[in-house]
Image (cartoon, rainbow, N blue to C red; front, side):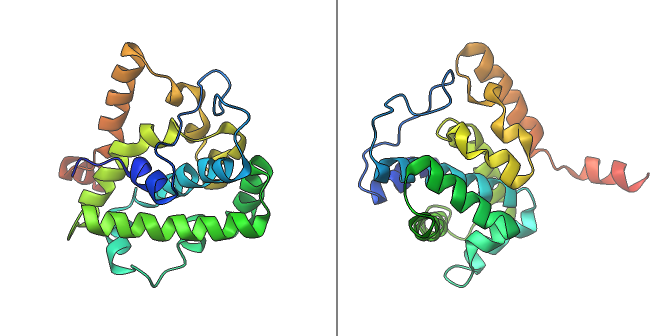
Length: 194
């Protein structure tokens, strides 16, 4: 199941590799990138962050393969905040809100297709664990100007420390991933006693 969904999505957009953002500037190092590349840079990690947040519930994660081709994922992932996200992506990229919305729908469809292909017959837990493992990769590509944490009501997604790299940061991200993916029967039993 080891695959890099960001690389696969970038290749579908005709880009060999989506650049990571700089932890210092919170943006792509090359400020002279064109509108199309900035649109893709904003949309891919933003939509993936929406799927990450949505898959924190295994029942929601299990819906991804079932709703293939039938769901309006932008509405499902972002609800009333979808227009706000389109506007933020439009401002960041220089594209119109219509172009941003179209690209968001296209990328969400591509994500679902990739998940269905790469995680064949995946259940909710498998899909949830996959997105948990990709969280830091998503954040390392997400421009801060999008403020996805505000859109998804999860300020940890905009925290600069999530985008740092290095040995200590890697250790902390590993610990964070372990806590983000724990959903054991013991925890369920303990919470039911209170």
